[in-house]
Image (cartoon, rainbow, N blue to C red; front, top):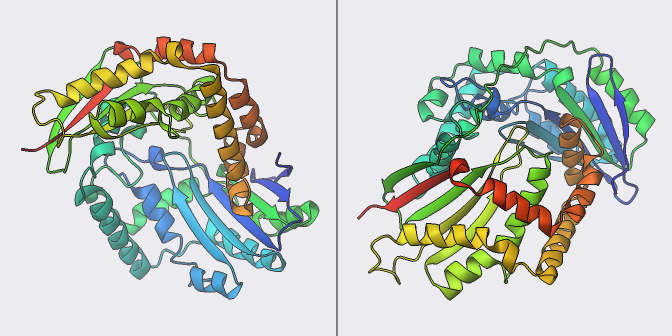
Length: 416
């Protein structure tokens, strides 16, 4: 259970405080409700690029990292499809300085030309290393474009094309910054040994004078998929891969909690059915996994496998065999799932989520995301949602979701 107090400034900024008396450290977390889905099709990668550029400093604090280090703190950030998050963890007595620098970044980013050019080069290099010049680097690019035809989830956070990053201008970044980095589009969370009223006072002092400028979003709604989709590609990779993906609800829907538990049952642990059957028993694959996308708009659940081509050289359609086996494992799960395995998976999921909430940084990030989702107390009710999932719900979910009209299959063939 994470206790918290909450306060909203007159400019719309939401402030959340979690008091943790067991640590001398404190985390100040600022999360903005903006991610790659807020970009335009011809200008992708801006949210992530701006995250990098936020560390180039302001006129008052031209070297952000150096200032944080002088406070004996550490900092980092991340960008997703839906949010961009920044945090500083430092001794509790330095919390006011953290407020000063983060409020200045919200309103006075300088985006010095030299820093912008340097960070643009860094992000382009990152895209080369993660997507363009490594095996399977375009795997999720292809999968997203197969699943989404209208919604902006169709490209990954790094961007759809390296040329979009190369052509991004300082003016593009500043426009994106002024549009979305505003108090009514953000939440500030403080977790540590602090007093709530003192934090609310600091929030008023440092963030209260920042004006709201946010523009209305216009993100296309993804239409319901009406028929099965598939994509075949050939690449220079060590082994072929396959992915079966199915549309589900967003991360606050019942679908998501059922999907999250289902992927744990199928892929997490020594007795999980996908690796046990496909890797160990039938030796069709060298790995098999399952995961679910935790997104603010409708996401997807996916089942992936890498072919064991060394031991199956004579098979003409190895990916097809894996596809059929993988689908059958999922569809037959309700008949095969024992009460013991079901409760074990549920307990494992709850324990895992508990361990994810131990540090001030983890709690601050979770509180921020829940707040932007519309209910800060989601950090606590998550446990109830997982605990209340039944075997019957999993069976009903599989019956309605794992169907041909809702299926996308990516065949990622090894070039021979």
